[in-house]
Image 1 (tube, rainbow, N blue to C red):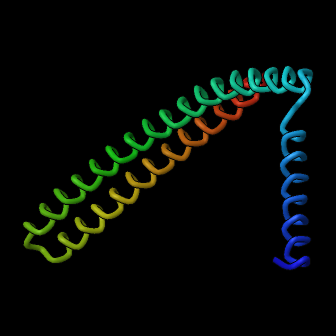
Image 2: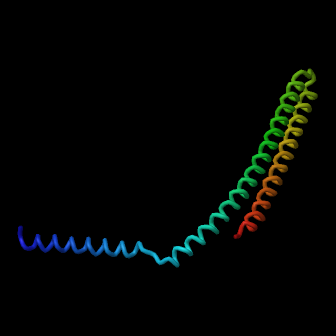
Image 3: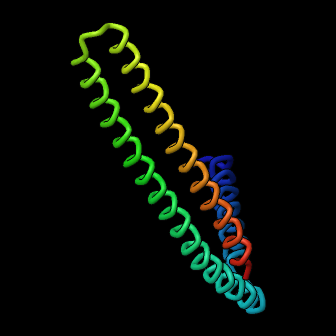
Length: 138
């Protein structure tokens, strides 16, 4: 083995030793810092539990609003289907056209009403979540 290889190996070993010593010294923390970390984690845990409850309440409200919206939309579609079916049984061309137009207007009105109610419910859930989130400050 040559001298330059020996110096390189000793140099690398020295760097590894310095890094290992530095990492072990870095890993040790003072008891005061550990206590502070523990205190923060208790607050974070209490905050997390509170936020979990607030999120669950918000999501359940939105799910309920979505279910109501879909039920109203399905109902509107069924009414439209029945109205179109009834319109097709009319023999007068103008009466059929008027019945189809009336069915479309009624459907649009029902759909818009369901959509507006959903938006109001979603906004209420969001507003309630904002209040709950502020209350979760521990």
